[in-house]
Image 1 (cartoon, rainbow, N blue to C red):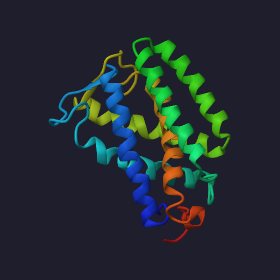
Image 2: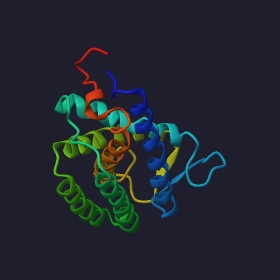
Image 3: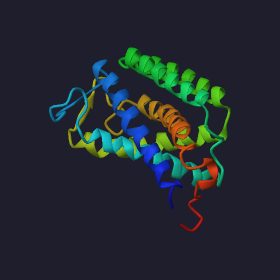
Length: 199
């Protein structure tokens, strides 16, 4: 079970290690949540980078398991631009509305619909589902251990309920961004291994 060419896997991981911490840093700066200890770094701790590096490959493996071989529609500079613009919009929505849960849910729902309409692919829904699943599962234990805390009231697994939607949106955007970077590296979808195939 793997995502294909080793260079593609590295590109996926690198995209996550860059985009994830940068997004978190913007959210921390905006007061959405606070880390108990950043290890001397501004905004996010050192372990944040490898943690996010693992996120795109996980999304890709889940997408391949759900939709089968060739599940990702392809890569393009347009997809990368749309994904980065979407990340910017997501930061703006949840940072500005984070203390108003209902408004954050409403704004996030509009953005989720816009992301799906922008890409118009089944893979977008699969990656949204993967993000909504992985995010809360990964967060629940560190939050309970006191690694970080949210400014808004915690409704579910130690986080505001709208974070499930936020993770769904970010899962799709990070998946498309990492695909735009990683697919050309390993020769397109031909190098992608489906989880049911032998490696």
